[in-house]
Length: 394
Ligand SMILES: C[S@@+](CC[C@H](N)C(=O)[O-])C[C@H]1O[C@@H](n2cnc3c(N)ncnc32)[C@H](O)[C@@H]1O
Image 1: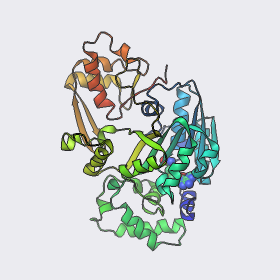
Image 2: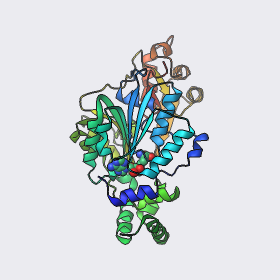
Image 3: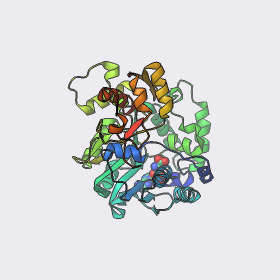
Image 4: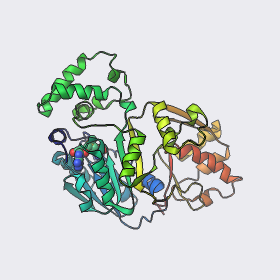
């Protein structure tokens, strides 16, 4: 189910705003749904990629996750079969055009509700990004996706988080009351006029980390005029997963969910409480991106395992190695929080050997106390989502 307002919104303003011809210039990438990151969190870095990956992109919008997955799997020469599912015809048309510009095949486009996901499955992987918090009954969405997931399958989910969206819900409430009954284009015009008159002290105007309203009409509408939008704390998200028979497998930047840099040792505090503490203390999370799987299933990332194959993300191995050799640390600035990890000079040697093909046994050959050196590298880079394990290129 979906409210008439939500459907009308995404027909009028497909989200996010994308021009299919831009596919000739750039690939939009991000978490979740990067194959290497999925493998790391869901399949112990050991998925057999010669087997086709059956994927559902649930609420696929204008196609970011669809295009990312299809293109990266095509580039890696790995087989896939992707079902794109969304209520909005206008969004689907844009996603289809993007796939066409890139000459991507292996995609089935479906206009329909994710509540019927099981009838298209089962799937090895489900992407559901920015959708579940827009359902009238989000739990029904979690349950429907769980029912569509194969026994060893996994999901990448993004839902909104409350603290980093301060000011958003006050404006959604006000605009919702003011513009009830108007069609989307009138709402947008009127809301933009009122927005200009808001005082600079409004919590939303003070919230410099939320910028979607500056990214075109679809961005403004999705952020401030949505009629169905509820954020989840990490505890609420974990509870929703649990009720659907799922469990949290990991988060792309686990160091952000660790409160110890802020408060010191947390003793025996359970993991979810620690994560909630970090969310409350940091106060900046706009979203939660998590990987999930059926409860009790799945494999942990293969930290330090000799046959594990590391990949770097978003950083050049040579540049990082040069920095490490000069400074003796790995410095990371992520989501407004800065971290620095001391590492030994040998870390530069091993980082130069990370190419997505060499396993740890090969990377460590001839390096004294490799396990210790590597543990430092792992703590910094895996913690920041800058390194993952996968055998996808072998
Ligand atoms: C905020 S957009 C996110 C699009 C895309 N997942 C992304 O992250 O770029 C939400 C999308 O979910 C779709 N949607 C909302 N409710 C849905 C439902 N019950 N079943 C399928 N799609 C739905 C909307 O049409 C819209 O395209």
